[in-house]
Amino acid sequence: MSYFAYMSYFIFMRQHRDETAPHRDAQAAQRTECTTARCRTKRRPAGLTMSLGGAVLIVLTGACSGPGSPESTDSSFLAPSTAVPVECATASAGADSSGADSTSAGSDVAALNAGVDNLLQVFASKDAMRAVLVSVDGRTVVERYPGSTAEESRNIYSVTKSVMSTLIGIAIADHRLAGLDQTLDQLLPDYASMMSPEVAGITLRQILTMTAGLPVDSDPSFEPTPDWIKAILTQGIDQQPGLFFEYSNAAAHLLSAILETATGQSTLEYARQKLFDPVGISTEPATTMVKAPVNQDAYNSTPGFAWPTDPQGHNVGYVGIKLAPRDLVILGRLYLDRGQWDGAQVVPAEWVDQATCAQVQTSLLMPGGGYGYMWWTMEAAGDPAYVAAGYGGQLIMVVPARRLVIAVSSDTDFEGQDRLIDNQAVINLLSLDVLPAVPRR
Image 1 (cartoon, helix red, strand yellow):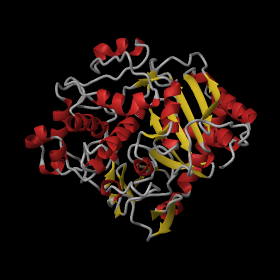
Image 2: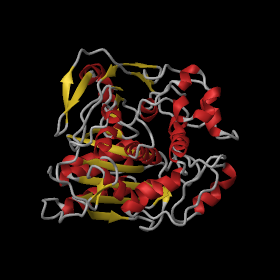
Image 3: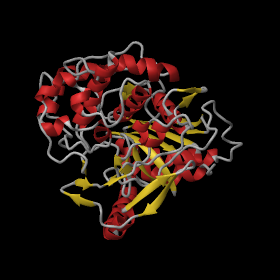
Image 4: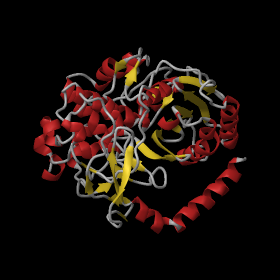
């Protein structure tokens, strides 16, 4: 199928979804109750969510609590959240990151290769998709690098946000942070005197769910300023915190300053100690230049790992980590196995469950989807799934029911946007052509 043929079909399906939107919105008005197997939907009266000016109005419900070990009952994970959850995707019991023979598990490797071939063919005219990897049961069974190599790293853009969420979960388990209901004046005391009461009262939970009320900022206005944190905290809010989903780079960047304040380490140092080193993601040497137009060419040409900073030295919290495609698979496998790696609990299992359970409903990435703690949630080929997504074709897709992780890495270093990879189109194609080749476990 050519890219143009696929997009014609895609546009038709989007129009069909628009025509059926009232019915779908009524179906979406539900809350969930999580059990030890997965989140189970329960009906509540429709009409409690609505769209307003591009933001999503949400209501207060209980948090979606996924399966966790009996000792993992920290109230900071389980406390009620500002949420309209949908169905959660959780790993099966006894998951193991050591890998398994995917062919003996029933996966159709030929069909997997054919599905990846079709994905690459559809986007061939873009000449931007540089890596597609498919992992089943902890073993990579398809690995393609058109016009690239396994070692080449790229900006993962907003997948960085999912990394930041992971570090927050680790820091709570480490007792470096007291919990998700801490407020910004408590988390960033050095800036408390300059915060408005509304900003001071924003909670860590609201930041993680993009309900903090901070302005939408696809082109962040704070970047030209000498102190990004100050600029973010003094710009005010444009919606009441806790009521609207508004995708905010500013909110994600605050997490970096919050982590540094809580741990006494740079975000990179903490990430290296608690996340990257334990799972084998190489971060040495690390390029940490200031994120600024004058440094863009040097950043683009830097091989290996990079994580730029703001002018104060905080690692950027919303974009900018450079990782190789296999590193994306590692992060996906870590989440698939509920935070375990080689028998060690790197990320709290309950944090993984909560982060990948829809705390808020939003169709910003996928129709009928949701947003957890900086992870997108959705249904793919009939199964709950979650995704870390970055601009222009950077994806980690996890489908626990199939023990499946898919990583996509794409170029964005070119003029104009004609070659940009559309993440929604990629997810749709993966659901149509790749997921059916892997049986449910």
